[in-house]
Length: 470
Image 1 (cartoon, rainbow, N blue to C red):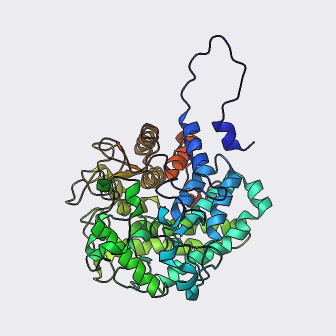
Image 2 (image 1 turned 135 degrees about the horizontal axis):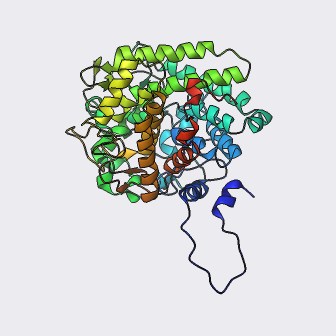
Image 3 (image 1 turned 120 degrees about the vertical axis):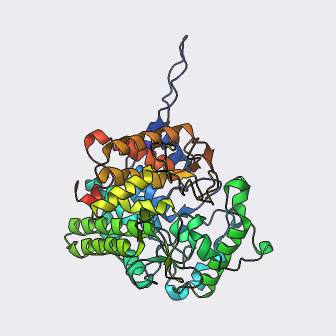
């Protein structure tokens, strides 16, 4: 029997005269049930209703948690995603399930037209995908999945098959997306960064003429409250950017929107460290990968660090200027081991200060500045707290010796995940559930925190620090 089924199935027994009420299922079992319910046979959807396909960085985070239940299923999760990679190296942000009706999600496959519009870029012909990307968490996920069961991984050739695809993915980003010329990757659409409608994008998005309101139908409003979702104006700009990119044959260039984002680049650096460990495991030298990770860290500091803000900021490539908005993305570089000690200490102070309130006014770090004019505690990435970014910050705090703060954040995440029904995101003040419940990465990262107990002195960033090589 599958290990997840074992966790979620209550054994049948002979009825007895006195049967006290069963204890409520543990947090571990409830999280496992979410992942079981979202499993399609080859991958895990973020949620059955709102997000019925496979999403790129969701699957990476899901695999990190899924490895504790079924390393085989975690490997399959990543393999399914990487099988949809384009010939130019990009890993698309959505892999579409052909059995899902077209009107269940927008933009749907007939909008992206990957097999035709993406032909010059090497889009696969047998599976439909989007044409944009998401943050590169995948090598980190692959290494952690390998460590969960090295014997199974080696027997299946998991890393042997994944390594060239992951290397091509990183090469695509480093060689095709350095649009600012400073050694950092640029995103060409807010959806690529993953924090879709962050106020950090408002300034560069203002240059984009929105698609006419009647030219598309938003399926997301069928599953979420409009006040929690991006506005129609923002969505119109997203559609315009995506359509223009498609109509250029998905050729990379600055277009109307190009932003260097600190979280995207920090995750690439973290995954370069992980890719170095994968190379070592396969008998290939990983020194060039470690050098790349250190070079990315240096470029982050040089181009995106803002001392006055006490954190990293996004850079508008068109204007050549930092965007003066404080988003959680600017705290994520805390997960990098080569970050200068004084910068790491400053990031901790900023996270715990009035702009993010960690350990004071908030239990989880909000996605945007509590004091910012655009702050909204319920509207998507404009203020609510998300579990994946908090998981990254918990790892970063622990990595830089902030054990007490990391322990408190871990406790807050576990309590909030269970109390909210594994919500997509929550109000940072009240922990009220927002978006959908039964969300994939919330459940998966809950499992990872439950298994990765601080007392063991280990954490999910051992792949970066160079420990636990299996």
